[in-house]
Length: 256
View 1 (cartoon, rainbow, N blue to C red):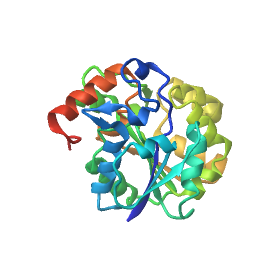
View 2 (spheres, rainbow, N blue to C red):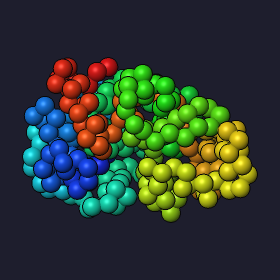
View 3 (tube, rainbow, N blue to C red):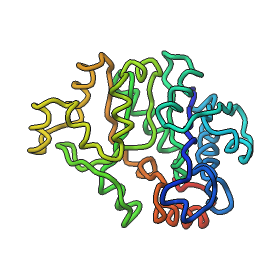
View 4 (spheres, rainbow, N blue to C red):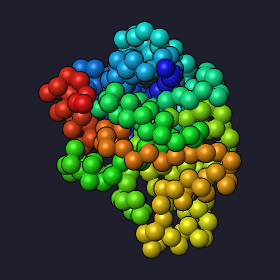
């Protein structure tokens, strides 16, 4: 059993503010239910998940239904700051699941797939990526940020399995990765000239990036190719919200 950290501190001051006047994105209503509650309910329904740390403003916690083994921790405005706050609540050397609060279509099956793949090779950080064709097949017309490498055209997931100590060991690299998460090409300076050249000729691989991260930080990481588009579907645009509302209105729960 592993513990989970849910990051739900983002202010609703972007494009989604045109759709819902909630102060925080986590409280945006989807079929009459706060968006973050779908994430929490999915985690609570997974027998593999133990304690859940919810990092959020007090107003968010006060406006959601409580669930068993949920520990709210008051967060700050930044994603990195909230991540650090959440990780400090956990055993530094025990793997934990980190999830953003804007993935209402997350399913237990997607989580179990990540946990199963993590058993195949020892590592301290497991980061899932999803092929473009998987995303577009599941959610036609949805817009994501993709990068093409030798393993395919991929987009990042919004869940991570990692030891807190390993994430802290990444230091400034973690901060840069979070800051450029919507513009992954801006991480090119971290790769070094040789890997940049490999990227330009589409020969860069997930394994190349893993080795580079270990060389820079001493941390063993594994890129996990997931067939679950739900983990790459974060609601940050009106079109995303419309699609999530349509799916959850029809099913009431994320579709496995």
